[in-house]
Image (cartoon, rainbow, N blue to C red; front, side, top):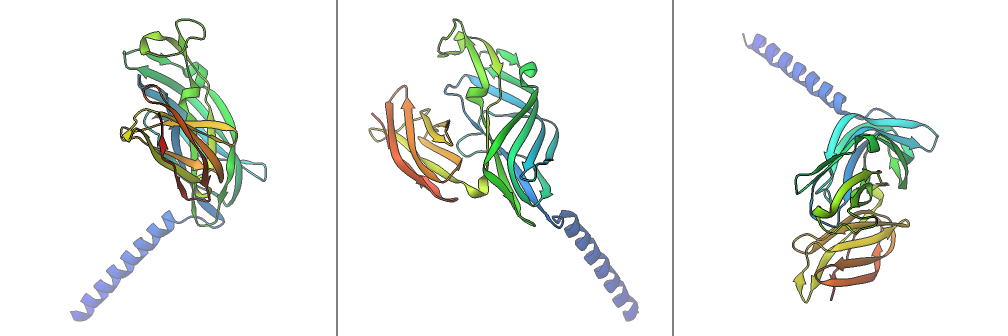
Length: 274
């Protein structure tokens, strides 16, 4: 009887080991490949009367330096971009691709819509449908057996173009909006090769909320807005020296120069405005 019990225990152990081994193999990255985790973030609107800004992604393709595209996402998923700011991101997909260097991304959209605080909505699907190709800077490097984080930063303030009551009118309130167009404005980078800038904005020692904070990255202005505690964060910032500009309708403006970003580190920048 003892021998039969030992045989049963051994059999169960072997079966469990085989199942665990199979599970590990299912999750393993194939030989000569690495994984890419695609993350989504945004540059926000400089006003608070947009309750939702939805973008539907149909396909994401990465272009490698050998001249071919690899599809990392294909589907029909809509993302509400409002709130994905100050370092907050949403993961679109994690997909295995061939190890190597990828220098461009092509994003195909199929829907877009925006919803305002007064209940008005604009369906912008006709504007959104199409593919947008941008350079990845720094280029995405995927190493065999490792997972790389890739950032798509959608500037929703530039992508959703609101129309005022009069031509050229500055959008200052929800009541002044009479229409909206859409033309996606992306930037893309390898998060594993970029750093961050974070800090706070104060006026006379008091935190300033909803201040517009901006920097220039690769010749393109990216922006964010301060949280209620005056904090802000930029992610996906290339090596270099930056000037952080702050503008607040209530508290004034200011800037800090020579903010140094190196590698994947975080540069701290606190701005006091008058």
